[in-house]
Length: 143
Image (cartoon, rainbow, N blue to C red):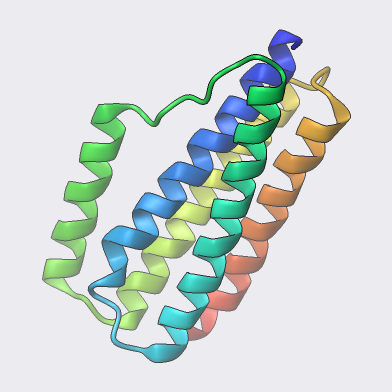
């Protein structure tokens, strides 16, 4: 597997894992059923993308990359502190939007950096970005 393809797929996988972890961290704080349903829908989509990236990496003889321990710990602490201070739907929506924005910027940067990656891996990254953009729009009603 070509290195740009491998690197882009690893970033797709890592980003999806971070999103899945964030959904899991916030789920206990969500009281609004509509917001919970929306989170579950997008959690499932991120799991599908993560599985797709993992499968493509495995087929290419590479392994997935796990999110960094420090990033995961910081994310968990940040989520807990923000939600302990104010755990309403508006705060959760803001956190989801912040995560989407971070994902769009990060993955968009990697798409530009790894522009010679395989068509399949670039398409996966673009699909993830579009999904993040759609989630940002859908969660705005909870602000």
